[in-house]
Amino acid sequence: MQRIRISPDPIDPAAELEAFTRKSAGSGAIVSFTGQVRSSSPGGKVVKLHLQSHPVLTQSAICDAFTDSPVLSSATDWRVVHRTGDIPAGETIVLVAAAADHRRAAFEAADFMMDYLKTEAIFWKKEICEQTSAWIEPRAQDYADRSRWDNHGR
Amino acid sequence: MQRIRISPDPIDPAAELEAFTRKSAGSGAIVSFTGQVRSSSPGGKVVKLHLQSHPVLTQSAICDAFTDSPVLSSATDWRVVHRTGDIPAGETIVLVAAAADHRRAAFEAADFMMDYLKTEAIFWKKEICEQTSAWIEPRAQDYADRSRWDNHGR
Amino acid sequence: MLISYYGRLADSIGMAQEECALPGGIATAGALRGWLAERRGGYADLTDAKIRIAADDRFVEDVADIANAAQIAFLPPVGGG
Amino acid sequence: MLISYYGRLADSIGMAQEECALPGGIATAGALRGWLAERRGGYADLTDAKIRIAADDRFVEDVADIANAAQIAFLPPVGGG
Image (cartoon, rainbow over all chains, first blue to last red; front, side, top):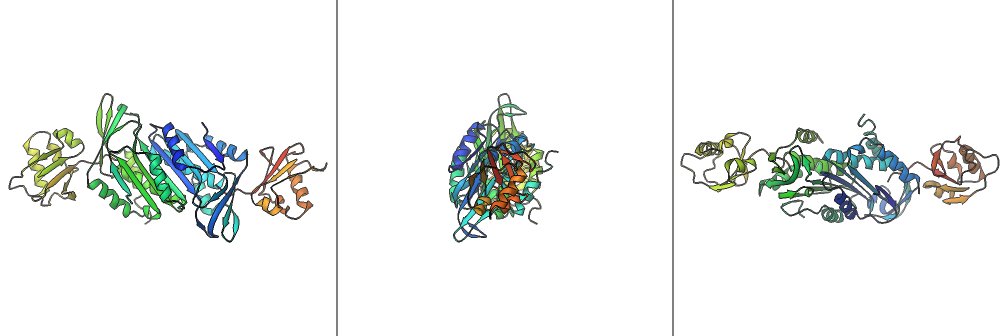
């Protein structure tokens, strides 16, 4: 079982959900999140994102954070698939999925994983628009979302 | 576009997500929830659920509640697929999906739809276990989850 | 008039639907509850205020005139999806 | 020693990787920052404390001895997935 996959290959969200759901039959609740490259941004019309990861640290940091998380301990299973490299507008950057016995735990697990990925995961992101391009850092909202989990389960 | 589908046909969550994602390309964020018949319950090992809906009121009440919802007004699109009739353990009862520009809105939309479906939607549910069978009403937790939305956006 | 019993009501009454001819004095949804409940055992549940009534696919209050409805549905508290 | 520059550092420095032979006096991660930054333009960013350093795929503090590392990575603040 490979819970975390980071690769430049295109992501097929339906195929990922199908494989995950088949493995999790009987869990009761499965939540998936699919993040796509938005076609417009403050910089203009987006052509593509360039996502860079570290060949070792990106995966190991996600693994450490998720394995130790009290939020994910309520999930029966979870999955992260993250694309890197050049990703055209409209295509999928990330898919996370979580299974749990009850829906609240499944929602929280997926929500937590995304908040982590958006703020702490080791990715560098360059947005290439028609006229400009720029390296992007997390929005203030992303950090606020992430901080919701700081006292979870304590 | 048929946002709400209630039918005794088996649900293929991956196919539903695929169709929804194709329509929503560029939205940025898509959340899906899949609810399956759990294989065990306080009544014992579950054989199947029997879900009954009303031929007119079930769909119209969901449509009214969701169309008027401030939570769903932040979503660019949403979908409800609900199975009725006899549903064997492990199979999918319900799939909801929500698309939005940002992930928080997509998560909240899917979460809200499920809380509504679990408490207010017009379904009657009988759990058929190996030894016993019983009509099921929402858990106290379901009502508590639902009440989280009462003041949303006001 | 076609009367439908949903959820656990179909089990307690022993059928999901029946065709009834209403006697002249029974004109409101509330009166229909009482008339059905008095007819025979298993129908007592119908007088529970938690059981809602729909006439021709619309929810109605007990005071509503249902004498001309083609279909009446008795709906127990919902169980969630 | 293979030195890698991630994210916006590769743009400001003009390359993603380079092979460097460290002079004798440069033994810690912090000293490496200063030595690289002094060599030529574009490297000034490396002295920013927000730029983290990994030696052989492990994060290290500025005081860490990196003289025997095979690979050093300079990692600017992450951008999120």
